[in-house]
Every structure is written in structure tokens, then in C-alpha cells.
Length: 208
Ligand SMILES: [Zn+2]
Figure 1 (tube, rainbow, N blue to C red):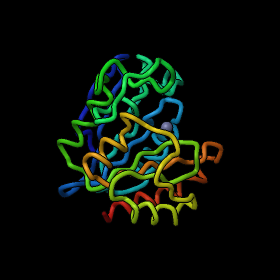
Figure 2 (figure 1 turned 120 degrees about the horizontal axis):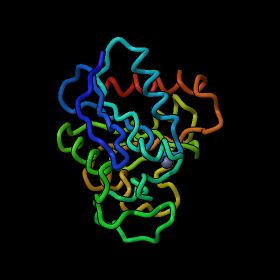
Figure 3 (figure 1 turned 135 degrees about the horizontal axis):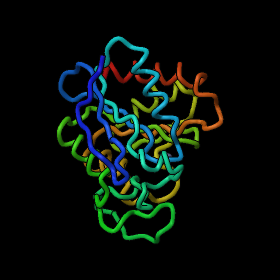
Figure 4 (figure 1 turned 90 degrees about the vertical axis):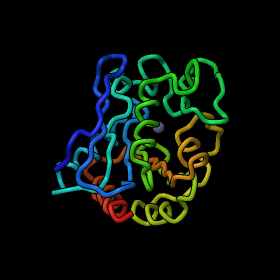
């Protein structure tokens, strides 16, 4: 059992959704498809929601529905949502696949997520990406990351190896001190083989 807690139309009139079951204050938040060409997160979240009776978690199954339909990393305006958050290190960048937008939080998708943080103050956040097979984190998430690493078998890495101005990890983890984990999954593994491990990770987060 879950319901739609928040809904917003994107530039291309697709629905951005926040879903949740019955939860107390500060529910953990799980986010899929920040990058449109990484659709696995939404499939895994939907499988979990179909699988469980109830959930204490919040979910944004697909933060970038326009990009998912277009098959692009960016949204329909060519902006990498993961570079568009209003962080102190946001920069105006060249218009490649990491383009951070015309200004910080210029994008509907970015604002949808910052509003969810303001409205629910999640205790911990997990975003589902591909393809690096690492557990990356920002903010006070070392312990959670190590537990997740044990379940999925990917190493914990504190930094992804290149600067990410305007990233969600910087916004939520570094600047707001919310434990924020970026799980980079294998993109070549069958989703049905990945799901049991992801389910265990969600169950772990249900307790936090
Ligand atoms: Zn990604």
C-alpha cells in the first residue's frame, strides 16, 4: 500500500511522482532515474512496491521522466539534473552532457526534489545510478555505505573521482548533512538478478 504524496508535470508533460506508504517523521528517501539513460532504478523501485505489503520509505521512482523517454542523460532541456542543484560550488558550464543549466535549480526536476527535502527532511537518501559498481557517499553516510556494500558486493568510495559541482550529493550530503548514498549499479546485469540485493538494501533502509 502506497499513495501519491506529490505530483508535478515536467516540461514535456510527464509526471514526476513522490510515493510513500505509512511512515513516521524523517522517512528515508530513495530516488531512481536521475539520468534518463539509467532506467534501472525505476524498475527496481516499482518491483519493490509491488512486492511489499507496506513501506516506511519515500520513493521518487523516476526523477527524469523526459530524459528516460528521450533516452538521454539530461532532461528535455539538455540539463544534467545532477549538476543543477543550488550548491555553493555550482558553476555555469559548457553545454555538454554535464550541462548544469542556466542557473542553479533552474529545472523543474531539481526543484521537485529540493521541495521534497524541505517537506519531509529524510533521515537518509539513496539514489540509484549505473554503471560504476561502487557505493559512493556524501555527508555522514560511511556506516550506511558499508552495510550497503556488504549486501551488494561493490566497494565503498568516498569520492567518485571527478568534480561534481551542483550535484545532489553535495547539496544534500555535504551542505545539509543528510547521509546521502549514490549506488552505482552494474548496467549489464539482469534486473531480476539485481533485485534481491536491492530489496535487502531497501529493507535495511526501512529500519533507518
Ligand atoms: Zn547517473
